[in-house]
Structure formats: structure tokens, C-alpha cells
Amino acid sequence: MSTNNSSMKNRTVFITGGSRGIGRAIALACGREGANVVIAAKSDKPHPKLPGTIHTVADEVREAGGQALPLMLDVRDEELVKERMKEAAEHFGGIDMLVNNAGAIRLQGVEKLPVKRYDLMHEVNARAVFLCSQAALPWLKESDQGHILSLSPPLNMNPKWFAQHSAYTTTKYAMSMLTLGMAQEFKKYGIAVNSLWPRTLIATAAIEFEVGGPEMMKKGRKPDIMADAVLNILSHRGNARTGQTLIDEDVLRDAGVTDFDQYRYSSGDEPLMDDLFLD
Image 1 (spheres, rainbow, N blue to C red):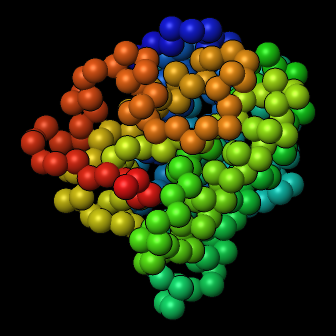
Image 2: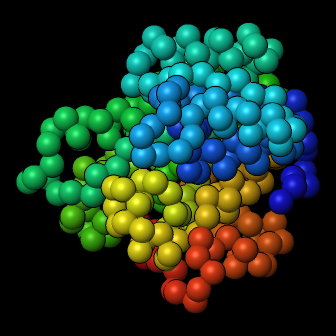
């Protein structure tokens, strides 16, 4: 899918968690549009089980027609985040967009969840949105297409979304609450701030290894649907659309997409599973 609004060409997009899954798909989609893509993730070296590093994705982005800068980044490290933002801005002459894609998940209740796992989810989900957005802000303010996009859900207060995994839920909702707050705070700078969440399960390594295994993957869509929705959101100039918690399918329907079968992970007729937080 190509952008049909303002061009992404030569725009600099900083993507956290950009080496695999949804982050990689977003990087490649931006690369195909001729963007400068910063792939910021921990995977500097190959993983024994999971394919892809920041370097392999950088090569893919270049092959797709974009410029790429792979940067090893742990979004929990305050000083390193600041350093990497500065490095990216100096390399490409600025930063236009930040995609807060890095995430940690453990669907477990309070009783049995280790505190260190709660800390990890809080730091990689909520705290990283705060930290990365703050660090990117000086350059986003200078862009005429400044945008912060976090991968987090609509705020759904149905108790069922808290009952079994309230720690994870609260860290993801905190990301969306930061979206609502920053959208108002940064409006004066012309920066758009939104969240995006998938309508259905997205088939990624996180699902395969942390949530439901290979069988659950068949009930999901490929990360490409999120990447196409991200591209559509980022390609708009200005902040006419800001402070929203958007759903991938709705964004693409509004853009005229009607064929959603193209995004299915499995070619069968297996019913797709709705993602968390969507009634």
C-alpha cells in the first residue's frame, strides 16, 4: 500500500523494537516509501531462536528503497535513549516521526507475577513511551510532519480486561493515556500524537513464544496490516488527527481498503481472533 497524502520520502522515522514482527514490517513499509528509517532495538546479534537483527532489517530497508540506520537500543536506558536520538538526528538531519513499538508482555495475574516481570513491562511499555517521546521532542518540534505513534489500545474499562492480567493491561493503558496527554501538550508545536492497535491478533514471535503457540498464529493476521495502517497515519501532515486511539482495520477502511484477506497469516478459513481490549 502506498501513501496517498504527503510523501514519506526523505522523512526520518525512529522505530523502537524495529528488528522483528510489527516493528520490522513498519520499517520495510517506510523504506518502500523512500523514508530514512532508524531501526532501534536490542537485537544487535543473532538470536538462537528468532530471526532478524537491526542489521538484517537495515539491509532489507535499503533493498526496499529507503535509507537505514541500525542502532542498538534498550529503551529502559535513559542515557542511551537520549544518545541514540541525537545520533539519529545528526545522521539524517532531524527526526520527523517516532514509533513506540517496543513492548513486553506476560499475561499473568497479580498473585503469581514476579515483580521483576512487572517492572520490565512497566519500563518497556509505559516508561519507554515517556522517555523516547521526551528525548525525540526537540527534533519533532522542528519538523512540519512531527508525529508520535504508540502501539497501544483504546481505553476499555471492562473489568474482564483486568481480571487475568491487570499488570500488562495497566502498562498498555498507560501508553494510551500518555498519548491523550501528549496530544494536548504538544498541539502547540504542531505535533500529532496517536495510538494504534490491531483489530485481530497479529502473528508475531511474541504470540508464538509468549502467549499461545503456533496454533494461535493461524488465528491472526500478518504484521503488514499494522505497517500499512502506520504508513497511512504518518503520511498526514499536521495534527488534524491527534489524540486518538486508532484501530488498524478502521484506518485502512477509511483509506479505501476492502480486501483484508490479503493480511491473513494462514490461508485457511479459520476464524480470526480479536485482539485484547476490544469487546
